[in-house]
Image 1 (cartoon, rainbow, N blue to C red):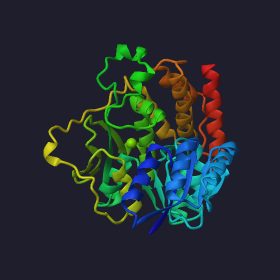
Image 2 (cartoon, rainbow, N blue to C red):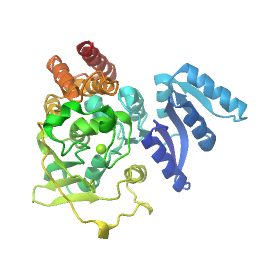
Image 3 (cartoon, rainbow, N blue to C red):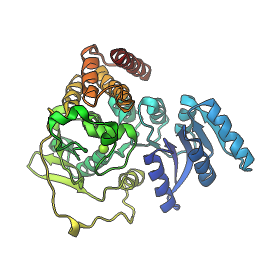
Image 4 (cartoon, rainbow, N blue to C red):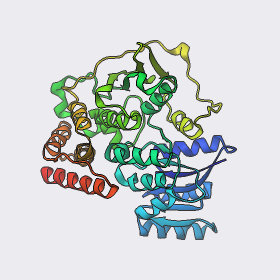
Length: 384
Ligand code: MG
Protein backbone atom coordinates (compact mmCIF):
# COMPACT_ATOMS: atom_id res chain seq x y z
CA UNK A 1 0.00 0.00 0.00
CA UNK A 2 1.41 3.39 -1.01
CA UNK A 3 0.23 6.41 0.97
CA UNK A 4 0.21 9.51 -1.18
CA UNK A 5 0.86 13.17 -0.50
CA UNK A 6 -0.89 15.01 -3.33
CA UNK A 7 0.32 18.59 -3.83
CA UNK A 8 -2.18 20.40 -6.04
CA UNK A 9 -5.07 18.02 -5.28
CA UNK A 10 -7.84 20.21 -6.71
CA UNK A 11 -6.11 20.79 -10.06
CA UNK A 12 -6.55 18.49 -13.05
CA UNK A 13 -3.52 16.27 -12.25
CA UNK A 14 -4.57 16.09 -8.60
CA UNK A 15 -8.09 15.03 -9.55
CA UNK A 16 -6.78 12.45 -12.03
CA UNK A 17 -4.49 11.10 -9.30
CA UNK A 18 -7.48 10.72 -6.99
CA UNK A 19 -9.37 8.85 -9.70
CA UNK A 20 -6.41 6.41 -9.87
CA UNK A 21 -6.66 5.96 -6.09
CA UNK A 22 -10.38 5.30 -6.58
CA UNK A 23 -9.62 2.59 -9.16
CA UNK A 24 -6.82 0.96 -7.17
CA UNK A 25 -7.93 1.06 -3.53
CA UNK A 26 -5.76 -1.96 -2.73
CA UNK A 27 -2.63 -0.12 -3.95
CA UNK A 28 -3.05 3.52 -2.95
CA UNK A 29 -4.29 5.62 -0.04
CA UNK A 30 -4.39 9.37 0.49
CA UNK A 31 -2.18 10.62 3.33
CA UNK A 32 -2.20 14.38 2.75
CA UNK A 33 -3.72 16.90 0.34
CA UNK A 34 -2.40 20.35 -0.53
CA UNK A 35 -5.36 22.03 -2.15
CA UNK A 36 -4.71 25.71 -2.79
CA UNK A 37 -7.72 28.05 -3.02
CA UNK A 38 -10.65 25.89 -4.05
CA UNK A 39 -12.42 25.56 -0.70
CA UNK A 40 -15.46 23.61 -1.93
CA UNK A 41 -13.37 21.02 -3.72
CA UNK A 42 -10.94 20.79 -0.79
CA UNK A 43 -13.88 20.13 1.54
CA UNK A 44 -15.33 17.47 -0.80
CA UNK A 45 -11.93 15.78 -1.09
CA UNK A 46 -11.37 15.86 2.67
CA UNK A 47 -14.78 14.26 3.25
CA UNK A 48 -14.23 11.61 0.59
CA UNK A 49 -10.58 10.73 1.28
CA UNK A 50 -10.17 11.49 4.98
CA UNK A 51 -6.50 12.56 4.74
CA UNK A 52 -4.60 13.19 7.95
CA UNK A 53 -3.56 16.65 6.79
CA UNK A 54 -5.00 19.22 4.37
CA UNK A 55 -3.27 22.44 3.39
CA UNK A 56 -4.91 25.50 1.85
CA UNK A 57 -3.38 28.65 0.42
CA UNK A 58 -4.26 31.04 3.27
CA UNK A 59 -5.00 31.08 6.99
CA UNK A 60 -8.52 32.37 6.27
CA UNK A 61 -9.34 29.48 3.91
CA UNK A 62 -7.85 27.01 6.39
CA UNK A 63 -10.12 28.43 9.12
CA UNK A 64 -13.17 28.09 6.86
CA UNK A 65 -12.31 24.48 6.02
CA UNK A 66 -11.81 23.61 9.71
CA UNK A 67 -15.20 25.12 10.51
CA UNK A 68 -16.95 23.21 7.74
CA UNK A 69 -15.32 19.91 8.79
CA UNK A 70 -16.37 20.53 12.39
CA UNK A 71 -19.94 21.33 11.31
CA UNK A 72 -20.00 18.07 9.33
CA UNK A 73 -18.82 16.20 12.44
CA UNK A 74 -15.55 15.12 10.80
CA UNK A 75 -12.56 14.83 13.12
CA UNK A 76 -8.97 13.67 12.75
CA UNK A 77 -8.03 15.98 9.88
CA UNK A 78 -5.50 18.72 10.61
CA UNK A 79 -5.83 21.83 8.47
CA UNK A 80 -2.74 23.94 7.73
CA UNK A 81 -1.94 26.67 5.21
CA UNK A 82 0.61 28.47 3.07
CA UNK A 83 4.05 27.31 2.00
CA UNK A 84 4.70 25.80 5.44
CA UNK A 85 1.44 23.85 5.10
CA UNK A 86 2.39 22.52 1.67
CA UNK A 87 5.82 21.53 2.99
CA UNK A 88 4.13 19.74 5.93
CA UNK A 89 1.97 17.78 3.46
CA UNK A 90 5.01 16.90 1.34
CA UNK A 91 7.11 15.70 4.27
CA UNK A 92 4.36 13.98 6.28
CA UNK A 93 6.12 11.00 7.94
CA UNK A 94 3.52 8.45 6.83
CA UNK A 95 3.52 9.52 3.17
CA UNK A 96 5.42 7.10 0.89
CA UNK A 97 5.12 9.01 -2.38
CA UNK A 98 4.63 12.67 -3.28
CA UNK A 99 2.68 13.79 -6.34
CA UNK A 100 4.00 17.27 -7.13
CA UNK A 101 1.31 18.95 -9.21
CA UNK A 102 1.10 22.54 -7.98
CA UNK A 103 1.33 24.87 -10.98
CA UNK A 104 4.16 27.39 -10.90
CA UNK A 105 7.05 27.82 -8.49
CA UNK A 106 4.63 27.63 -5.54
CA UNK A 107 5.33 23.90 -5.33
CA UNK A 108 9.09 24.28 -5.42
CA UNK A 109 9.94 24.43 -1.72
CA UNK A 110 7.62 21.51 -0.93
CA UNK A 111 9.07 19.36 -3.70
CA UNK A 112 12.61 20.13 -2.53
CA UNK A 113 11.65 19.34 1.07
CA UNK A 114 10.09 16.05 -0.02
CA UNK A 115 13.33 15.03 -1.79
CA UNK A 116 15.37 15.93 1.31
CA UNK A 117 12.95 13.78 3.33
CA UNK A 118 13.66 10.87 0.98
CA UNK A 119 10.18 10.69 -0.61
CA UNK A 120 9.91 9.42 -4.18
CA UNK A 121 8.41 12.12 -6.41
CA UNK A 122 5.85 11.92 -9.20
CA UNK A 123 6.57 15.21 -10.91
CA UNK A 124 3.85 17.02 -12.85
CA UNK A 125 5.11 20.47 -11.95
CA UNK A 126 7.49 21.32 -14.78
CA UNK A 127 8.29 24.78 -13.38
CA UNK A 128 10.12 23.06 -10.51
CA UNK A 129 12.54 21.45 -12.95
CA UNK A 130 12.83 24.58 -15.07
CA UNK A 131 13.54 26.91 -12.15
CA UNK A 132 15.53 24.59 -9.88
CA UNK A 133 16.26 21.41 -11.82
CA UNK A 134 19.98 21.72 -11.25
CA UNK A 135 19.39 21.76 -7.46
CA UNK A 136 16.59 19.17 -7.37
CA UNK A 137 18.35 16.54 -9.48
CA UNK A 138 21.54 16.83 -7.41
CA UNK A 139 19.51 16.47 -4.18
CA UNK A 140 17.60 13.52 -5.62
CA UNK A 141 20.84 11.71 -6.52
CA UNK A 142 22.31 12.47 -3.09
CA UNK A 143 19.25 11.13 -1.27
CA UNK A 144 18.68 8.30 -3.76
CA UNK A 145 15.17 9.58 -4.52
CA UNK A 146 13.55 8.71 -7.85
CA UNK A 147 11.86 11.55 -9.75
CA UNK A 148 9.24 10.02 -12.01
CA UNK A 149 7.89 12.38 -14.65
CA UNK A 150 4.11 12.69 -14.97
CA UNK A 151 4.25 15.20 -17.82
CA UNK A 152 3.12 12.98 -20.73
CA UNK A 153 6.17 13.63 -22.94
CA UNK A 154 8.74 13.02 -20.22
CA UNK A 155 6.83 10.03 -19.02
CA UNK A 156 7.05 8.64 -22.57
CA UNK A 157 10.79 9.40 -22.70
CA UNK A 158 11.27 7.72 -19.31
CA UNK A 159 9.59 4.61 -20.72
CA UNK A 160 11.66 4.66 -23.94
CA UNK A 161 14.89 5.13 -21.98
CA UNK A 162 14.36 1.88 -20.10
CA UNK A 163 15.57 -0.10 -23.13
CA UNK A 164 18.97 1.55 -23.65
CA UNK A 165 22.01 3.05 -21.93
CA UNK A 166 22.45 6.79 -21.36
CA UNK A 167 25.54 6.93 -23.58
CA UNK A 168 23.57 5.25 -26.40
CA UNK A 169 20.97 8.04 -26.58
CA UNK A 170 21.37 10.29 -29.61
CA UNK A 171 18.27 12.51 -29.45
CA UNK A 172 15.25 12.89 -27.23
CA UNK A 173 12.31 13.88 -29.45
CA UNK A 174 9.53 15.70 -27.63
CA UNK A 175 6.25 15.70 -29.52
CA UNK A 176 4.09 18.82 -29.58
CA UNK A 177 0.47 19.01 -30.70
CA UNK A 178 1.26 22.43 -32.16
CA UNK A 179 -1.67 23.92 -30.26
CA UNK A 180 -4.67 25.68 -31.81
CA UNK A 181 -2.57 27.97 -34.05
CA UNK A 182 -0.40 25.42 -35.81
CA UNK A 183 -1.87 26.36 -39.19
CA UNK A 184 -2.90 29.95 -38.54
CA UNK A 185 -1.18 32.41 -40.93
CA UNK A 186 1.48 34.49 -39.20
CA UNK A 187 -0.27 37.80 -40.02
CA UNK A 188 -3.28 36.72 -37.93
CA UNK A 189 -1.27 36.08 -34.75
CA UNK A 190 -1.59 39.75 -33.73
CA UNK A 191 -5.36 39.44 -33.29
CA UNK A 192 -5.53 36.17 -31.32
CA UNK A 193 -7.93 36.50 -28.37
CA UNK A 194 -7.76 34.73 -24.98
CA UNK A 195 -10.89 32.75 -25.95
CA UNK A 196 -9.20 31.39 -29.08
CA UNK A 197 -5.99 30.62 -27.21
CA UNK A 198 -7.84 28.77 -24.43
CA UNK A 199 -9.22 26.19 -26.88
CA UNK A 200 -6.68 23.38 -26.97
CA UNK A 201 -7.25 20.71 -29.65
CA UNK A 202 -6.34 17.59 -27.63
CA UNK A 203 -5.80 18.18 -23.91
CA UNK A 204 -8.06 19.79 -21.32
CA UNK A 205 -5.75 21.58 -18.88
CA UNK A 206 -5.37 24.61 -16.64
CA UNK A 207 -5.47 28.14 -18.09
CA UNK A 208 -1.78 29.00 -17.98
CA UNK A 209 -0.61 25.71 -19.49
CA UNK A 210 -3.26 26.02 -22.22
CA UNK A 211 -1.93 29.44 -23.23
CA UNK A 212 1.62 28.08 -22.95
CA UNK A 213 0.62 25.34 -25.39
CA UNK A 214 -0.73 27.94 -27.81
CA UNK A 215 2.57 29.91 -27.72
CA UNK A 216 4.59 26.63 -27.53
CA UNK A 217 6.36 28.05 -24.48
CA UNK A 218 5.08 24.92 -22.75
CA UNK A 219 7.16 22.81 -25.12
CA UNK A 220 10.13 25.07 -24.43
CA UNK A 221 9.77 24.48 -20.69
CA UNK A 222 9.58 20.77 -21.47
CA UNK A 223 12.88 20.96 -23.40
CA UNK A 224 14.54 22.38 -20.27
CA UNK A 225 12.73 19.82 -18.09
CA UNK A 226 14.02 17.00 -20.33
CA UNK A 227 17.62 18.27 -20.12
CA UNK A 228 17.46 18.18 -16.32
CA UNK A 229 15.47 14.98 -15.84
CA UNK A 230 17.50 12.94 -18.31
CA UNK A 231 20.86 14.66 -17.93
CA UNK A 232 21.36 15.67 -21.57
CA UNK A 233 22.39 19.00 -23.14
CA UNK A 234 19.82 21.07 -25.12
CA UNK A 235 21.54 20.01 -28.35
CA UNK A 236 20.28 16.46 -27.68
CA UNK A 237 16.63 17.49 -27.30
CA UNK A 238 14.46 18.20 -30.34
CA UNK A 239 10.82 19.10 -30.82
CA UNK A 240 8.61 17.58 -33.49
CA UNK A 241 5.06 18.76 -34.17
CA UNK A 242 2.72 15.78 -34.10
CA UNK A 243 -0.89 16.98 -34.30
CA UNK A 244 -2.50 13.62 -33.41
CA UNK A 245 -0.85 13.60 -29.95
CA UNK A 246 -0.73 9.82 -30.18
CA UNK A 247 3.02 9.36 -29.92
CA UNK A 248 3.79 11.01 -26.60
CA UNK A 249 7.52 11.26 -27.32
CA UNK A 250 10.42 9.32 -28.79
CA UNK A 251 14.03 8.41 -28.08
CA UNK A 252 16.50 8.01 -30.94
CA UNK A 253 19.49 5.81 -30.20
CA UNK A 254 22.95 6.03 -31.77
CA UNK A 255 22.39 2.86 -33.82
CA UNK A 256 19.48 4.55 -35.64
CA UNK A 257 16.63 2.92 -33.72
CA UNK A 258 13.82 5.22 -32.65
CA UNK A 259 11.53 4.12 -29.83
CA UNK A 260 8.15 5.74 -29.42
CA UNK A 261 5.54 5.51 -26.67
CA UNK A 262 1.93 5.36 -27.85
CA UNK A 263 -1.14 5.35 -25.63
CA UNK A 264 -4.53 6.90 -25.14
CA UNK A 265 -4.49 10.69 -24.53
CA UNK A 266 -5.33 10.46 -20.85
CA UNK A 267 -3.17 11.79 -18.00
CA UNK A 268 -4.20 8.91 -15.77
CA UNK A 269 -1.78 6.69 -17.69
CA UNK A 270 1.43 8.62 -16.92
CA UNK A 271 0.18 9.14 -13.35
CA UNK A 272 -0.37 5.41 -12.90
CA UNK A 273 3.04 4.68 -14.45
CA UNK A 274 4.75 7.03 -11.99
CA UNK A 275 2.83 5.72 -8.98
CA UNK A 276 3.42 2.06 -9.82
CA UNK A 277 6.97 2.22 -11.26
CA UNK A 278 8.72 -0.17 -11.83
CA UNK A 279 5.53 -2.24 -12.00
CA UNK A 280 2.84 -1.99 -14.68
CA UNK A 281 -0.60 -2.59 -13.20
CA UNK A 282 -3.48 -3.81 -15.36
CA UNK A 283 -5.58 -0.81 -16.34
CA UNK A 284 -8.61 -0.01 -18.48
CA UNK A 285 -6.70 2.69 -20.40
CA UNK A 286 -6.53 0.84 -23.71
CA UNK A 287 -5.58 2.31 -27.07
CA UNK A 288 -7.37 1.25 -30.24
CA UNK A 289 -4.51 0.63 -32.66
CA UNK A 290 -6.94 -0.23 -35.47
CA UNK A 291 -8.42 3.28 -35.25
CA UNK A 292 -5.02 4.81 -35.93
CA UNK A 293 -4.86 6.27 -39.44
CA UNK A 294 -2.23 9.01 -39.52
CA UNK A 295 0.96 9.82 -37.69
CA UNK A 296 2.22 13.18 -38.93
CA UNK A 297 5.50 14.73 -37.80
CA UNK A 298 6.74 18.14 -38.92
CA UNK A 299 9.44 20.54 -37.72
CA UNK A 300 8.23 23.39 -35.48
CA UNK A 301 7.96 26.90 -36.95
CA UNK A 302 10.27 29.08 -34.84
CA UNK A 303 8.97 32.25 -36.51
CA UNK A 304 5.36 31.76 -35.48
CA UNK A 305 6.41 30.34 -32.11
CA UNK A 306 9.30 32.55 -30.91
CA UNK A 307 8.75 31.23 -27.37
CA UNK A 308 10.31 27.96 -28.51
CA UNK A 309 13.42 29.73 -29.80
CA UNK A 310 13.67 31.73 -26.55
CA UNK A 311 13.39 28.51 -24.56
CA UNK A 312 16.29 26.85 -26.36
CA UNK A 313 18.36 29.99 -25.77
CA UNK A 314 17.49 29.91 -22.06
CA UNK A 315 18.23 26.17 -21.92
CA UNK A 316 21.73 26.78 -23.27
CA UNK A 317 22.43 29.50 -20.68
CA UNK A 318 20.73 27.59 -17.83
CA UNK A 319 20.37 28.92 -14.27
CA UNK A 320 18.83 32.39 -14.00
CA UNK A 321 17.76 32.44 -17.66
CA UNK A 322 15.54 29.39 -17.23
CA UNK A 323 14.04 30.93 -14.08
CA UNK A 324 13.44 34.22 -15.91
CA UNK A 325 11.86 32.47 -18.89
CA UNK A 326 9.28 30.80 -16.68
CA UNK A 327 8.63 33.82 -14.44
CA UNK A 328 8.32 36.29 -17.33
CA UNK A 329 5.94 33.97 -19.13
CA UNK A 330 3.67 33.60 -16.10
CA UNK A 331 3.41 37.40 -15.78
CA UNK A 332 2.91 37.86 -19.53
CA UNK A 333 0.22 35.16 -19.75
CA UNK A 334 -1.73 36.83 -16.92
CA UNK A 335 -1.49 40.13 -18.80
CA UNK A 336 -2.68 38.49 -22.03
CA UNK A 337 -5.65 36.82 -20.29
CA UNK A 338 -6.52 40.21 -18.76
CA UNK A 339 -6.38 41.69 -22.32
CA UNK A 340 -3.56 44.05 -21.36
CA UNK A 341 -1.16 42.74 -24.02
CA UNK A 342 -1.66 40.99 -27.38
CA UNK A 343 -0.78 37.34 -27.96
CA UNK A 344 2.62 38.13 -29.49
CA UNK A 345 3.27 40.43 -26.53
CA UNK A 346 3.97 37.25 -24.55
CA UNK A 347 7.21 36.37 -26.42
CA UNK A 348 8.15 40.05 -26.68
CA UNK A 349 7.93 40.41 -22.89
CA UNK A 350 9.91 37.23 -22.27
CA UNK A 351 12.62 38.28 -24.73
CA UNK A 352 13.08 41.65 -22.99
CA UNK A 353 13.21 40.07 -19.53
CA UNK A 354 15.77 37.51 -20.72
CA UNK A 355 17.88 40.27 -22.28
CA UNK A 356 18.05 42.08 -18.93
CA UNK A 357 18.82 38.92 -16.92
CA UNK A 358 22.49 38.49 -15.98
CA UNK A 359 23.93 35.00 -16.32
CA UNK A 360 23.88 33.32 -12.90
CA UNK A 361 23.44 29.88 -11.38
CA UNK A 362 21.50 30.01 -8.11
CA UNK A 363 22.73 27.33 -5.72
CA UNK A 364 19.88 27.31 -3.19
CA UNK A 365 16.07 27.32 -3.36
CA UNK A 366 16.11 30.76 -1.68
CA UNK A 367 18.33 32.09 -4.48
CA UNK A 368 16.04 30.52 -7.08
CA UNK A 369 13.02 32.21 -5.52
CA UNK A 370 14.88 35.54 -5.38
CA UNK A 371 15.80 35.27 -9.06
CA UNK A 372 12.19 34.36 -9.81
CA UNK A 373 10.94 37.46 -7.97
CA UNK A 374 13.49 39.64 -9.73
CA UNK A 375 12.33 38.41 -13.16
CA UNK A 376 8.68 38.96 -12.22
CA UNK A 377 9.42 42.54 -11.13
CA UNK A 378 11.24 43.17 -14.40
CA UNK A 379 8.30 41.77 -16.35
CA UNK A 380 5.73 43.82 -14.39
CA UNK A 381 7.83 46.96 -14.87
CA UNK A 382 7.98 46.33 -18.62
CA UNK A 383 4.22 45.86 -18.82
CA UNK A 384 3.34 48.87 -16.62
MG1 MG B 1 3.41 17.95 -21.66
